[in-house]
Image (cartoon, protein in one colour):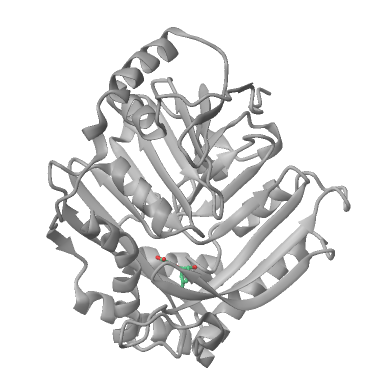
Length: 410
Ligand SMILES: C=C(O[C@@H]1C=C(C(=O)O)C=C[C@H]1O)C(=O)O
């Protein structure tokens, strides 16, 4: 197994900016992932020079350093696309290169040449004019309301307890649009989110997002973490003032909805007989323009001698009832019969694996797909028997706005 641990350290400032590196990889057609972890300043970039991105079994202990991205509907045999890190770069908050994997190949040489050319081209991601976006397509309001009503009927009939229904909308991107500029703005605007930009050349897709939801993380000390995140309301009151999180009013519906996600996580621990988990919450967590209820779970995998806990929990958790429903299979069936579109990587998971001995996988929410000059935005919400269809529609609008508002400000 090849693992990257800050292999070569730089102390001097370099002219190579992370976004230029990403742009160079994009132009050369290399798969790339750029990300920034929540509440951290460093940005990480990995590239893969292969012709295709293979689907790998997510056995975290056996994987080399890389970046995983899984669709909502897992690939066969619980696999995810896995971009092995052929090269890795890490940058500090001043965008100085502070670590780099140190093997040189023809591809890395080509990359660096392109990168240096970009270093002289500062206009690459400047964009000062406000941009407007033409709405190309949006899921029908009527259809969404009908699906929510059908979901409530299925819940009342006892077929499911909760189901998460989502929708998308597409906007045309102007030719001046700069994806790397948006990445920067997402980092500034959403410090608590996992911000990522992933290029999948074989699918001709870019995925850009700022998600608040950890699915599975295991740090250097062997601490496993996951969260139960659900229940949504605007982080601003009617006059546009931020609501203090401690005063956020939650209804029975949201409390119950989040409790279902918590119970599901605890049932997974029980299934594998892990009793030594710490639970904190639920507390109100701000995620950009929204607030959610969140409970945090942590397990010391070293103390309980369970190094593969991350792998086992990943297999059990995805897709959680925060993005799918309860019970899982009937909820999934309901989604497939009613949503009327393919979620692809939205509500799947993504993140770095075994980079500097840490793995951080997040649920792919508050994200968009960019393909052929069109951005597709996604938003979903948990339906319970107390749902009000029009409110559920508004919730999906608010979730799409997390990214749309940043596009519009650009
Ligand atoms: C499905 C989404 O979000 C999930 C659903 C939530 C809810 O139902 O309230 C809240 C947070 C996320 O777990 C989304 O952002 O699209």
